[in-house]
Image (cartoon, rainbow, N blue to C red; front, top):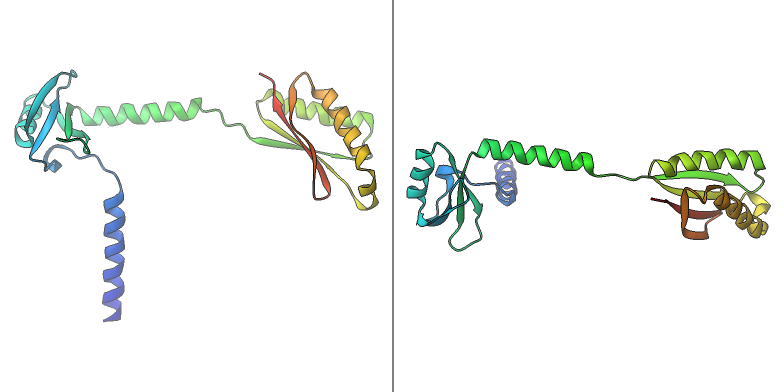
Length: 188
């Protein structure tokens, strides 16, 4: 008996989950008594029963698609649904390509960094900024270096001067634990 109840509960949950997923109703799936119909060329065909609307769609060898189920009466459009889905997926794919995702890149410095090493780190940071990425610069203090936070600010200022042509300071240097952290944005 317990096994039956577990399976029954599983099917109830599955049924509820399936009901909440939005799905476009097509052709015979449209059960509304009356629908407002829009033709394949965008013209209003008026309010008619779903059976009449389906017959009009079949005459044109197209699909009847419910596009606004919440309207009173629901709005259905006569269209080639396969072509519509293909174009919609194509647009979504193209929008994903166009969406520029800028990531956060990090450069780590130390308090006792030499001039040449600082230039090397700055060149690496310039590459990131040219690529359109945000930059996080962290300067970690070890042991007794915590007493020289003001020197850390000096290192960050020298670094900022090295990359000022390619990026601007977004967030002023601040302490996060044992690290002095600053954020930079790329210049357009």
